[in-house]
Length: 187
Image 1: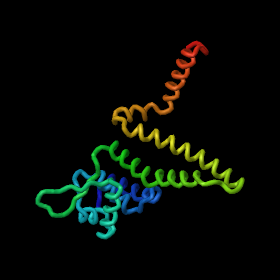
Image 2: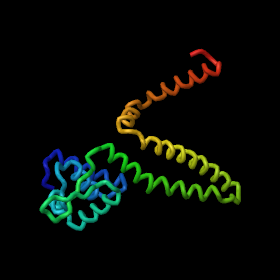
Image 3: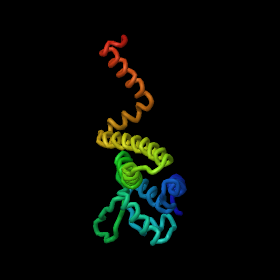
Image 4: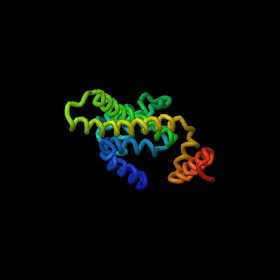
């Protein structure tokens, strides 16, 4: 790998983390390289920078395109395909969240719905179905929350994330106002 030390450390880390995120090392490295690159790169540039085979780079780019994490870019007077990542890190977060939801959450909800529609034939199945209903309810709530949050403007989303656990103060204040309006206690 012939990269500046700072870039190399970042690329290597993403490669190591790839397996924990469900992608292989090379795909993680390709993404990291494209993310920090000041210009779009073609497959040959990636092969040279990472020292991996052309076929690995091609497969990795296809996988990243399937995830909508890399964008093809046309470079004038160059017939090769070039690739980059979205500039906005918040857009990348939104794409990752949406893709993970489509690939992981939606299929789980579908299976849970199917299983909850079945009539349990025994006490263990009734117990299991009750637990599945709890899981389904939680995932549905999270999915509904996600659908609302994903429509937030970036500035609002950033403000929400910065609130962190401070949001509980807002909820406590809301509860006090509701109690006051209902005449239960003083604010």
